[in-house]
Image (tube, helix red, strand yellow):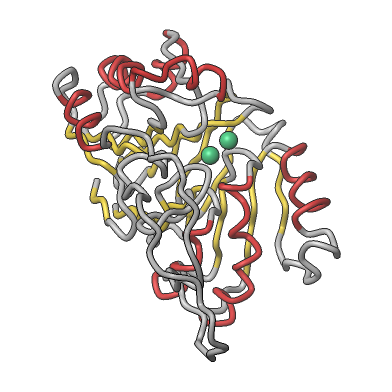
Length: 287
Ligand SMILES: [Zn+2]
Ligand SMILES: [Zn+2]
C-alpha cells in the first residue's frame, strides 16, 4: 500500500508544509481535508473518494472547499465524507454557509456515530473517540486482501490505556501526531496535542512496523525573521503579486520555536522498534 502525504502541518501552512491531508490512491481514501488537498487531482485512481474526518478544526477541513477545483481537473462519480454527526453538521452549516463558500459540494455526508465499522473504498474502517478540545476520532483501516493495516491518530494527547493500545492492534503503519517536544508538555495538554515522549510511549506499546510522525508544528524549524528586508516602496510601480514579495518594511516578530522535528523523531526511534519517519509534504510511504 502507498500513502501520499499531501499536507503534514498542524494549525497553519508554512513555506514547506500544508495542513493535514493524506491520501491512499489504491483505495481512494483521504485522511482529513486540510489545505494539502489541492495536490490530490493527479493521484486519483478510483471513481469514488472517501474522506475520513478526524474532527472539524479548520486545519483538517478547509480543503473541502478546494475539491471543486480538484474534481474539475479529475472528475469522480461519488464523494463520501465520514465523521461524527456534530462535526459534519458544523462543516455543512458553517464552512459551506452561503456567506463563506457559496457553492454546494456534491457529497454524501455520512455520520459514523452509530457505526462500529464501515467500508471506505476497499478498506474496513473502525474508529475510536480521542481527547482533544471538542473531541476527535482515531481511525483504523484494515485491508482484507493484502492483510495490511493503518492507524491514524491525530489531534489527541494520545491514549496510552490498554484498551487504546489493544484497539490499534499492531498495525503495519501507525500515523501519530507530535505537535510539541517535551519542553512544552503543559502546552500540549492544554491544547489537546501530543509530545515526543508520549508518542514514544504509545508507539512502543502499539508496536507498529512503521511510525509516521504527523501534524508537525509549523513554527518549529522555520527560518527566524530578523531584519527588515527592504525599504518601503515610494514610487508607484506595477508588480505582479507573488508570495514573499516585499512591498515595505517587515515588522520584527518573535523567533519561531527552537528545535527541529528530526531530533524529536530520533528520540522516539531510540525508544521503539518501529521504523520512524518524519512526514513531509509530497512524501510517499510504502507499508
Ligand atoms: Zn490539527
Ligand atoms: Zn484539532
